[in-house]
Length: 450
Image (cartoon, rainbow, N blue to C red; front, top):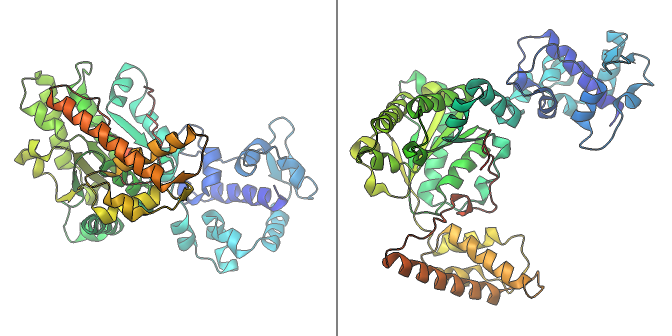
């Protein structure tokens, strides 16, 4: 690391400590990452030690922060704690301003706040371009721990949800193949989030509850997660099938807690998968406690709002025919996720194979041969072709490898359908994370491992 990096960090801490109107989102992301300490806030005073500076700048390499600045006449180090400090603040500030440039100031809203005018840098623009604290995994998971606490009740609540920080989302919206209608709805949602204050002013509060409808593997979960990544919003995924679990006692209470967490993490995306399981529970003879949980969920959906609470609610179902009117009416937009057409299949093949070397690759031919397959199916076809090539010690594929993989996949699919006709229940291999996008999305279950 360079001396100016360490001096910048020290001055950043000073300005941040002296100006309480600045908050965590004004700090550069790499500084926040080193400062969270398992909490949802960065306490003042923010102190810079050699260890702290090395965590911010070293990128895993062993670099000595004190060695970078010890020659400067205005720096000192506390021998016990390793805390770095200035012996003369004015000289340190003058040295930094003489050696800094506008790009360095623009990349640090705290410095733009203090010195922006001298470098013709707008604090407002620097703050807008800085990744917000809500995108940090440390902030998201720190806040969740504070809200749910520890113990059996916390573990029970975590059975209902998976929570992702935006930086943990691997799905990329640019690598998901959408229909024109889906692209239109995505753009509308993004604009609604951007202009929440305006929508509130004109009294349009019942906006921002979407229902994604389509067969397994068509990209419902992937699209919701990719939106989270693009908009830098925390992502809370609710597993509704857990509502019917006999092992969950205080389910209604936990449903309330889920929505409480969503409002605390806002702006965020609250994704409710398997929404049709509501209908299963309401129409069954399940225990009264479970029905109370479902009623609590429906009431909470009614009460949450994108405009008022900054919570974008997305439901998803593979079985829309199972939903009754009470469920349908809670969503203001229905977005269909059909199996991809030939054009989309060709594009999906181009995306998922872009890191694979393939001789005579023809995405259009593959698209013609894969009618009825979902994005998830196409990725399984690619996996089959890659593994088959590896058995022959080949890392370069051919078009023939892919066509053979399509044929083998179709055979297995037909066998599976025959099993279903015979009354067997196949293993559920619906993986929305392998749908119309490239890559596997990382999946961290907060506080609970399966």
